[in-house]
Amino acid sequence: MKKFLYNIAAICSAALLTLPFAGCQETESDLVSFVDDNKLNTPNDTVYSLMGIISKMQVVADRTIILGEIRGELTALTENASLDLQEIANFTAGTDNPYNNARDYYAIIQNCNYFIANADTALTKRGRKVFEKEMGAIKTYRAWTYLQLAMNYGSVPFFTDPILYEKNADPDLYPHYDVKQIADFFIKDLAPYVDTDYPNYGSVNSLDSRQFYIPVRVMLGDLCLWAERYREAAMYYHDFFTKQSDPHPLGIGNVQWTSFDFQDIMDSYATQFTSQSLSDLLTIIPMETSEYDGIMSDLQDVFNSTSDNNYFYQATHSKAYDELSQAQQYVLVYTDPVTLLPDTICATDTIHYDSDQQKGDLRQYSIFKLRNNASASTSFSSIRQTCYKYSSDNVALYRLQHVYLRFAEALNRAGFPQAAFAVLKYGLWKDNIEKYISQQERDEAGDLLSFSEYMFTRENTSGIHSRGCGDANADTTYVIPQLPTKNDSINFVETKICDEMALETAAEGLRYYDLMRIAMHRNDPTFLATKVAARDGANHFNSELYSKLSDNKNWYLPLQ
Image (cartoon, rainbow, N blue to C red; front, side, top):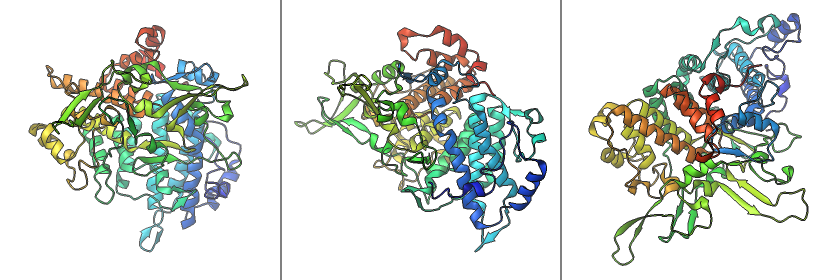
C-alpha cells in the first residue's frame, strides 16, 4: 500500500482539508487558493483521490470490528483486555475512549464530498467517463461511512458538500439524520451506479484491488434492509449473486465429521479466512504490514496470542456463543457398508469428544484454537489462542456468506419465510427451490427466486447451516413448525437467521449491528437487551445491563 498511496498528501483533500466540527486552522484565503488550484480533472486524480480515501478507511478499520463485536454477546473479554475494550463491552465508554472518535468517520466523508463536488464528471477518455467507476466507489464509501456513524451514534450531523471554512464547521448548521433517514438518502444517491464496474488497478501488494471496494448492489441491499424496504433489499442482493458476468454461488466449504463414529474431522472452512480468495472475501480494508509504511491493524493482538502481546489474548468466544454452538444438532448422512443405502445419524452427548467445541456446530472448533505452551517466564502466557478469522493483516468488511444471510433476512421480512429458511437449510438452486418452497410463495417472490440452473447447482451451493452442522438438509428437527400465523413463521425464521448469523459470523464485527437491526424490525429493544445481557451464559444473566439496553437510547456511543 505504501507505493500505492505514495504522495497522497499532495493530492485533492486527502491530507489538507480539515475535519468538520473540530475547528479549522486554515484561513479562508488559503482555502480558496487550495480549491482553485486543485480541480480534479486528470485521469491520475482518480487513482490518487480514491487511494487517499482508502488511507482514511484504514484509520477506522479496527474500531469497525471492535464496536460491532465487543458490544454483542458472542465475544467475551479476558482479564488481559485493555480498559478501553472493557468500557466498550460494558457500555460505559465516554468521549475519551479511543474507539469513540466520530471525527475519523467524518474525515472519510469530507474527502468523499470533496471528490464528488470537484470531479469533472464530463471528462472522457476513449469514450468512457474517466471518473465514473471511481465516483461509484467513492459514493459507496460515503454511504457505508454514514451508515457506520448512524449505527454507532444514533443520530448524526448530515452534510454532502465539503466543509471548507471554519464558519461552516458548526454541527448545529446541519440536520441530524438517523439510520433510516441516512439509508433512504443513499438508496437514491447510489441507484444510478448500480451497474457501474469496480475500478481496477491490478494487483497491489499481492491483493486484487477489486477487493478494496464495496459492491454497489450489496451496499444498496444493506441500506434497504435498514430502511425496512425488504423486497428492494432482497432484489439488490439477488441481482448481485446472479449477475451473469460475475455470479456468486454460496459455495460448499465446511467443517465436517468424516466418520460415522464422529472421530475424524475434515476442515475446509477456516481456509477461507487465510486464503484472501475473491470467491468468499468480497471487501477488505487493506492495511500496512509495518508501522514504517503506515497504519497497521491491531486486531490480531486482540483475538490472538502474539509476541507483541506476550501471548495474552484479550478477547475470546463467550459462554453464550458456546451454548448456542453446542445446542445445534449435527447430522451425518453416510452409506451403510452392508446395505449400500444412505443412512442418517445424529451426533449425541454420549459420544466422547476431545473438546466441548466439537459438540453441535463445528465452526467454532474450526476458528478458535487453544494450545498450551509452557513458559519459563511468567511474563508470557502459557495458554495461547489462535482465531483464524484474524490471520491476515487486512480487515474484512464483507464476506459472501454475510450477504446471503442478509438476503435471507430480507426475503423473510418481505413475506417469504420458506425461501429464507431454504437459504439456511438447503441452498437456493433450481431443484431445491421447486421442492422446498411452495408454489404460492414462488409466485409471489417472482424473480427473487430466479437462479440459473447452470450457475447455481448442487456442486456449488449448500445451505449455510451445513457449513458447521453436517447434512442440514437431512435434519428432521431443523424445520419451520406449524404456527398459527404467517407473522409467527416470519418471527421464527428470523430467530433462526439470527442464530445462523452468530454461528457463521462470530468475531467478525457484525453481531451488535445485526441484533440492533432485528430489534428495530420487531420494534422491540428487549430483543437486543436479552441477547447481550446473557453474554456470560443463561445462568449468569446481567439484569443491570438488560435494564440499560432495554432503552434504545443507551445503544449508542456519546458523540463528541
